Structures are given as C-alpha cells and as structure tokens.
Image (cartoon, rainbow over all chains, first blue to last red; front, top):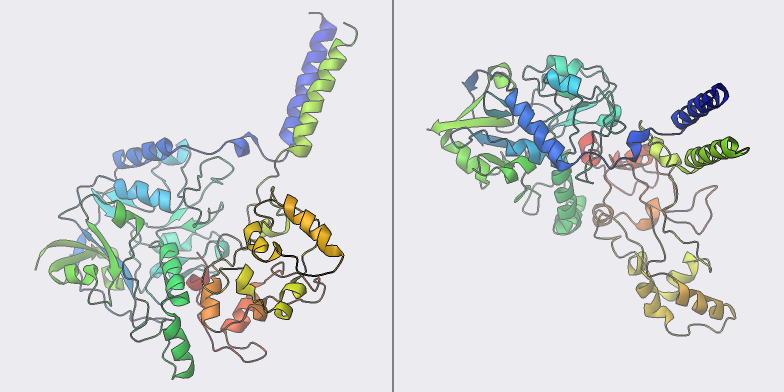
Length: 310
Length: 188
C-alpha cells in the first residue's frame, strides 16, 4: 500500500466513524437489552456483597395511619416472617422483574450500589418500610415523594429532581438513585409493561407494587364497585380522600399480592391490608412478635418483621 | 482500479447516510417528551373512506360502547375490528352512491382497520370504566375543541390540569363531586 492509499484509508475511516457517532442514538439503543440471566447474576452478586443488618426492635401492630391523608379502610403493608425466611433471594429477582429494576455498571456494583428495591441485609430481606411518618417525604423539595391515603410511600418519578435529600434522610437506605441512564446503557429491560422505566437522576424505591393496587382498585370500582360508587354520590360524604367508599361495597384489596410475596417459596412475605381483620396479614401478625429496624421503629412502618410467637 | 476507492467511500457513506436518516430516533428521556414526537403505529392504515362519527351516532341509535366496547367497563375503550364493522355493513344500508366505494374498501380492509396508539405516558393511569361508573359521559372529555376537527375523537391532547379541574370539583357544569387528587391515584 502506498502512502496515498494509506492516507485515503485513514481519512475514510475517520469520516466514517465521525458520521457514525453523529447518528441519533448510540449502538446500545439497537440492542434488545440485557437477558434474564444478567439479572440473576446481579442478584447473586448483590447477595455475595451482603450488607450488615439493622438492630430490630419490637413494634406494635400497624393500625390506621396517624398522619394525613389517612384512609379509614385500607392501609397496605407487609409482614416478613424471619422464622420462615432462609434468605434465598428469590424475592429480589421477582421484584426486579415486576418493577423493571435496571442493572448497574461495574463501577457502581463494586460499591454495592445496586438498584434492587429489595436487598438482603444480614440475610434479611430489606425494602422500604413505608413509614406513615416518612422522613423521606418531609425533605422532598418537589413533592415527588409523598404518601397515598392507603399507606404507601409513593414516588412520582416525573416530579423527582434528583436532590437525593430523601435518600439522605432514610435511615434504612431503602432509596436507590439512578446514577446512570439505564435505558441508553442497555441496562434496563421492560419485563412488565405496567411499570414505567425510570430516567437518569431519579430516585426510586419499593412501591409496594402500586401498579397492582391501582389496577385492582380501578377494576373493582368500574365493575363490582359500581353500585357503591353511584350510591355514595347521593348520600352524605362517605368517601375518604382515597375515593374508597366506606361500606359493604368498598374495595379492600383482597386477594392482592406483591411480586416478592408471590415469589417467596417459604411464604415468608405476607402482603395485605392492616385494617382488614379478615386478611391473612392481620390474622398472622396478631399472634406474632413484630419487629422493625431501630431507626424507623417509631415512625409507624407499614412493613414489619415477624419473629417468634406471642 | 481508478474508481475503486471512490466506490468504497460512496458505498460506506451510503450505508452511513441511510443509517443516519432511517435509523430509529433516540428515545426521549424526560417527562412528556415522548408525546409530541410519537410516530404513527407501523401498521396503521389510512382509511380509503373516511369514517364519520356523526353518521354512526344517535342518528342510527348507536352509542360509543357499541363499537368501543371497553369504554364503560375496561381501562381502555378499544377500537372496533373489521368484524365489528361488518356486523352492520354486510347489509346494503343506504341507496347513496358512495356505498359501493365503501363496500369495496371494506373488502380490502385489514382485520384491525384502526390501530390506536395510547397517548398516555406510561406513568399515567387512566381507567375508562371507573369514570363511566362515576357518571362521567364519554363526551365530557371527548369533545371537539377549537382547532380540532369536529369528527375526531380520542385525538385530543389532555393536560393534567383538565383532570385536576374535574377531580377538584371545579368543572364548569359542577356535574361531578370531587374525586381523588393525591399523586398515587393516577401516577405510578
């Protein structure tokens, strides 16, 4: 190859790469995203980098929320049976798939900064405890972190400006920050079309599978709850802020389960309505000792641990 | 060999230019960006004969639910399939000369003539059935507005303010009582 051809080749390649770089979207946009195996591997890795646990203290059974807005009929939560849980980590993978939790880059993984909404701490599944007096919501400058009347500490991703104050004010580090744009890095996979993918610079955490609650509530109100809704229109103001009518026809979230509860082979995670006496959650929690991490025990958590019988 | 290098360069640039022009657009990454730039669904078909809602409405005793079967009970209202149209249109319905053009258009129409792309962003929840159960009529939200073609339904650009006005009970007609306004009711 003579000098002339060599220079031509160099020029062509330079121009080609420049043009390729200019096109909208990088190479990664074309990829179909990570495989399920990548998520399984990451869960295994997170479990290998186990974080220390919290000191657990006894708490009373969660009742009606003391803080506004509070629904008189529904307060959703979970109880995790530590006597049954063997720390297999299946809940983490189920949660990742249900909520489209993205993978993280190597540099973040090394620091243990996984996006997993559930993590094992000292072998105990730990997620957002949905405190009714949530410290994270108090410091949110945009109102992105707020409470639903039925006891969920909800996160409005599009409102989040990424100040990370909430994460700093959470003593159990339940909140995960999207340091990177998981979509363009090819780290995100939309397993569940019902849950939106989060953008870079947004805080996220366990939502208590809010999408399942919303879908079930709306389907109930559209069909079975028809009579209740129409009846309440003419009657006195029987509705709470949640729109749930107090009465026989009201929605209590019966039969609903979170993804982690469904995935648990030992049935150690029980999801339910704390204000529904007939729910499995209340029946089981009544005869058990309830615990919560010391840091949030006084904040009236909706998610508690169970250990030993009363 | 005279044109070899020019050929290589032209070919390379041709590929890259095609990729540059025809490659899939970059995904918008911030709130609401998806909406404006949403391309038409790939399998959507421009109908040969324009559909006119007013010809199918009260004049022949049809309501929205007859074709949009989910409008009163389901989350989505749904678009009718060709089979739904043919339930009525297999019979000669009028004497108008246009009916022949319609019949031939119906013959060649695909099984699902209308592909409706959901314009709601993925973080917004809307359930038609809940609103119907609460006594909201279809045309309380789906009405023609200034600048919108009279016959177009469902193509309106809804703003959260429209939802909130009604949910706060300040809708102009005073027709509905206040409903849930906490974020988690409609967003996820």
